[in-house]
Image: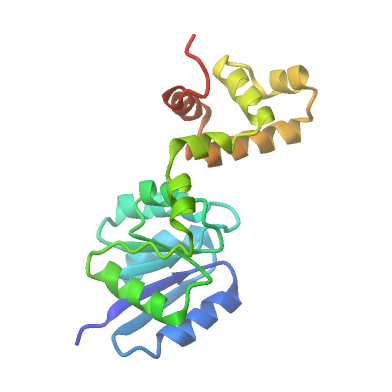
Length: 210
């Protein structure tokens, strides 16, 4: 019987080792590698040809969402399951190309079932969420409400073409605070730069078009 080739991606060694020990007990699984540094993932996928990648979201440097986007652009056949402590990045993960989204408090049987389901072409979402929370999570209204008043102010200034330095002068915030807020805005809107943030803000009605 052909085994499901699995690559583990997590910057915490203890997590990787725990997953490895658990998954290798399954006769239809083969752990082909472990990666603790995001920058090495693309090369490892190319060299090891895993069928399923278990991907953490929060890692130093590039996060799991962007890493999934890059991986899927280079290796579309590789299935990605996000395995994370955070439940608020579902829509971003799906848009990046992930086939599954699991929170780390799922039990062993749910994880095994999810890996097999993704390998077979299904997309499980074991979120440990109530239906109400899942509905809110996937709605634009809920995504909009996550932007703080400060972030909305900075977003409007970005749309007006104000530079980081200009924003610091107009908001009386430090440059570090402005950059941190901009990073949070990008993350919450699921974008990568200022122009994308403005376009998404217009699309969602967060700011008015000039």
